[in-house]
Image (cartoon, rainbow, N blue to C red):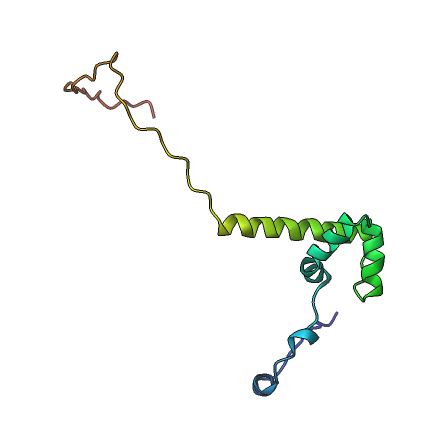
Length: 129
């Protein structure tokens, strides 16, 4: 069975690089987004529609009519993911300071002992290994 390896010449790579550098930037409004990214951008509007009584199914139908066609369960999943990502960004942006520690106080009932000199006697090596 012959191998279906894709090959390209270095000349073609150089031509691609040169032409890519000359291509103009695409207008932001004309860039295509993934459905997941699009849902993340309209999540506030979707939440507003839900507050107005629309179901996820109603909102999925509305979005399909506007060019963003995806099933209601997928919309629900993407919204949950977008909300988690937003919450994670907010949590990362505002770290909560650690709780202050209470000051250390010596217990008057337990007197602090001066450190006694400890002794240590090593045992001879054994052949138990």
